[in-house]
Image (cartoon, rainbow, N blue to C red):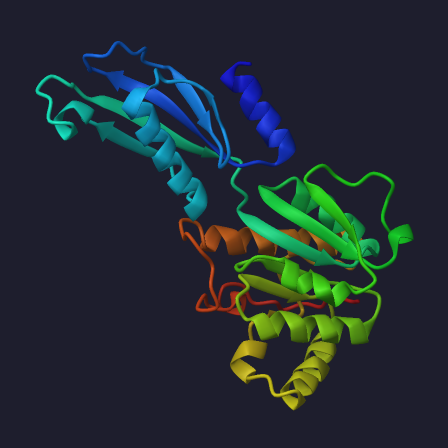
Length: 279
């Protein structure tokens, strides 16, 4: 299988990888400039000539995968010198991360806005889990890049997301929205939390969450209304475009960070939501 076919197959599977390419070869061991190797967390595909250089390249690529690095890197290896040899020469390798999701997103709710939003998110460099207790609400065809999750205990799915995830809540039930909000805010390790609704809904939720003992600074991280204020309209697709735009703005603001954490400033500081999201 060629490296191009390998990349296409890994992309279809949603598996991140690093493409390693020999850019300049001046070593004593013959290697072909332009040779490529594809590295995943579990396997390597193709070869750049084997030996200690290939091992070091694989090691570095997997470090990049583990850290979630999105940045292309050029690295110079002088393995002969490092092994005490006088004529090892040097090799320059290019490391290109591929398929690493910019955001892992949980979308709660398969209603009208959810059905408009998930295809947009699935077309972005994101990994999307689409969650609802009502299987009949999902469309027959789930977009490639999204995973359908049917669970009667919807709130349990909050704990199944990794740190730094994006949470979008737009269910059919305000009490369920509140329980999800409490579970997400309790974690306080998300990169983004958006709740569909109006300013009135936000005020009610803030009051109820404070009554449950939540710190106002934590509650402030909740985006409600969510979405770009500049994108007007009440149609599901218009609201979906607004929310997707805010997601893009958020992960672009975090670009280059290895991990999201609760220390990240609230998205409210980035983008004023001056409009409504009608639930």
